Length: 382
Image (tube, rainbow, N blue to C red; front, side, top):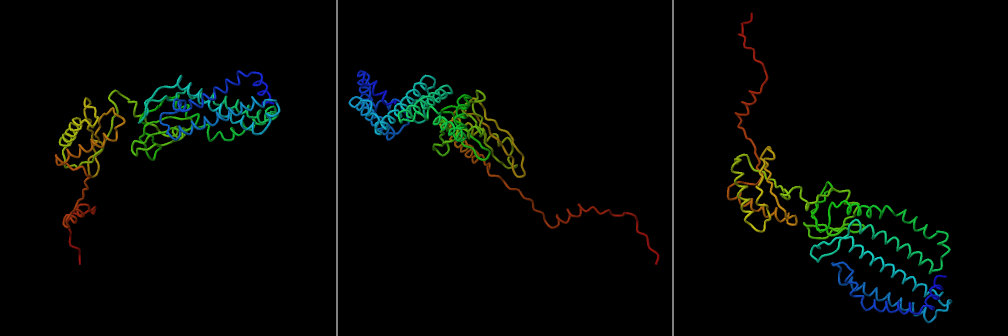
């Protein structure tokens, strides 16, 4: 049995036994430092304390198990169910710790440093780090599963391939729930369409969302909604099904080209409208809170000539993608102020026509299609 082999090995190698005991005692002492060092920067205090308690508890179990092998390592007493449970817990703990440490090392080696939104710097995943982390996690998980089965005394299931086959069938039946998100996450990281701290606009055809990419995890992506100021979680596969606009990557050196639309009546001349918009633009440039590109002039275009008003489009450039909403709101306020000073109404006018009764009758007579015979009328015989 697997436990008997451990008993014999530890009984004949006291140095290894005492080394493992010293390592577990050391892990108990330095658990708070290790948890803070290898945890995410935004982890809460409650989560950190829970992880410290879990590590210390499992290390105590490991010390108890090693003590049992040291003092009762006769090869027979190691068959108790309690020892098997302790051994399984230790295997799970060591597997989790190994996966966590390897994942941290891979992220440090192949990841990239980013500045968290509202927090300190952190190491973000790349395509290489995510793929290697998944590979090592699967490999260590399989090794841990085999070890647990051997400790539990079900080696015959391993020889027949029963457990591994069951796990394979289970993964195959549930692959629709986890495989698309993992693959989509790898595709997102590999395509480099967006990364952490990028401002994106997601559109599914019905509504749009303006958000900052917080981080891309194995199954989902966390976003910070710029409008509502809260965190949003979206599945990786769902993000790939939507249209994503990366506003942090400009199409030209001018920056983002933002547009605002206004409907002004036909009674206002074109020159007066342009003077009003230019006045608002100069006021916005003078305001330090409005990050508008001053070197690029305002673009004023006539978009549509409707039934009641002329629709004007105003285009300006900005390079501060994090302040898009504030910039548009403050600039719109400057335009409102300039319109009031110029006596131009920004409300959509409504036109109507009224006719008097005589005008209506005249219109009806002019529109009559009856042909009148202009030949002279002769007298008819009586």
